[in-house]
Amino acid sequence: MESRVDEILTTLKRIKDRLENLEVDVKEIKKQTLGKNSASQPDGLQKGDVQATSRPEQRKLLSRPSGDDSELGKMLRSIEHHHLSAELSENEKTKPALVQFVGEKFILPSLEICRSGVSYMGSTYEFTALPGKSDFDIQFFVKLPISKHNGKKVGDAEVLESDDAAWKFVKGGPVDLLDEAGYLSAEKTRKLVLSTVDKALKMSSVRLEFKGDTVEITRSTSGPAITLNVKWRGETVSIDIVVCLKAADMKNSKFDLVAKPYAKSSTTLANRYWRLSYSSHELKLLREFHSKHPRKNTLLRIMKLIKQHHSQLRIFPSYFYKNILFLMVKKDPFADWDTKADLAPRSCLGLCQAPVRGSKT
Image 1 (cartoon, rainbow, N blue to C red):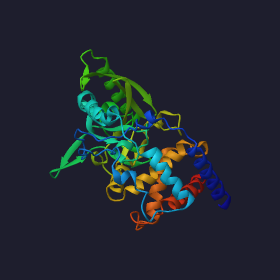
Image 2 (tube, rainbow, N blue to C red):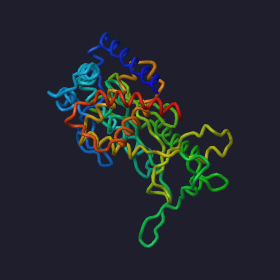
Image 3 (cartoon, helix red, strand yellow):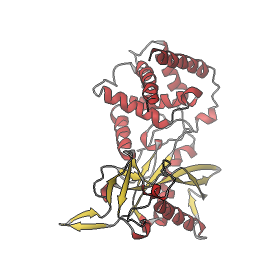
Image 4 (tube, one colour):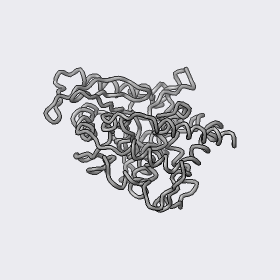
């Protein structure tokens, strides 16, 4: 444990030296991908419910009179000031509204026949994005058969345990998406959404215009996501459509499920596996953090930025650093995040402890 801590502390010192000498392109800083959304957001997201550009309380969360004067504390405040606080270009401010526009004018109408609902996810809506690293995800919930029992709507599909704790089976669903044993196929479901998107893109009538300029949409795939590459005013915004099943539409399910390829099996049975998704719960937590204790989100952004500039920490995915924050909050749920200038030791502690946990999994 001590050797691991020493290694991480050494890494942090190298990060400090590198960041101090880093030449930051002002134009790139201005391309911070989160701005106020002038349009209304679906599923409870209101106007301005994306990461703000340079609100004073976000820019100076670490700069307080009783601030931490340690070397690490000063380093973190410097990181926040020079790398996380920047005005956005007009195009960057408009990107969330562009995503909203594409969702309403193309995605929702194109997939209406198989849609139960959508949720907007990603760092844009979590208030955790870095300059130039914002992401826009749309959870697309496939429509499942619903019946009424005693006046209440109940999903006909039932979630069953599999031999892998993080994955589930689903019994029942649209007939054309079931396998020979009656299990809902994740591959068939994903292909249905993919083919529907492709058909919509091939229609000659699909021409969109946003704020007086043409919007061009192409499609690619990335992991379990169907990626729409939206080109507008010379810039490209990627929107990942993730095929999911809503917990409320199924029996015996507390969490949503996502159609992600199951790599542990090469047989056709692998198509029965659906991955548990905690995205909606994480979104709720991070938005609550931002509302009540925004320094939690700031700490996550700092950890992600440190990772971005140091190869030894890039071995861990961004999701890993999100879990560091969740573990820190869970370990000390009553910690004072508002008045104590202890963000520096917290980040150091989180970075030191997490790799030890990660090495055991």
